Image (tube, rainbow, N blue to C red; front, side, top):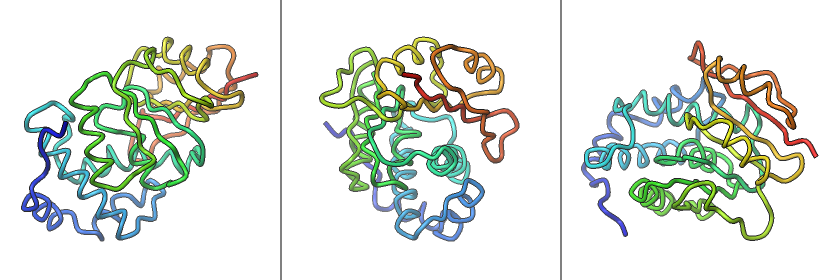
Amino acid sequence: MILFSASARATRSLMAELSNSKIKLLLEPYGVAASDHLCEQVCIYTALLLEWNKRISLTTVTDPAQIVRFHFGESMFAASAVPIRNGRLADVGAGPGFPSIPISMVNKSIFAVPIESNSKKSTFMSEVARKLSLPNVHPFRGRMEDYAPAGTDFDWVIARALGMHRELVEWAYKSLNPGGSLVLWLGDADASEISKLPNWTWHSPIKIPGSDRRFLLVGERQH
């Protein structure tokens, strides 16, 4: 059930503030060479996010430029920095769709399952996928423990600012294919702690552009 959408007027107003050229400049530090089509998708997504955020809590970041940097830039950064390419991806605690939907926007070969227990946030993600014509994005409403994959397991499990790190790492180990990867957006202290956990091959943390203490931590599931 769709609760509400961004009005055409709101979208046009945002497009006047977030031009394609501005979005390209904002995303460039994150290794994203944005096409005009991608910029238009970012603008539509941002307009939806701000409109829904008036009624349900989706984000504390409300400045459009900061949304592009913090939500889209930091999400898309992983697509090239890790890199995340091809295969099935689970995004645990996806909230309003970050980071999995932006990754799907820049990499059409990803089949993404954003997992979110909040029904309104899950509905929002379904609306985003519909508006942006992203057929490979399939939100799942529920907790990670509730998800029973049909067919093959995941090649990627990702999470951003979820917490519950040990529970997530245990679930990811059971849900990934052998050699599959867990990608976490973390502060430096959490990255240091998690990288000591066994049964994984942990890579050196990757610093997120524009951030002093936020990193991508990548672990490969050992056989």
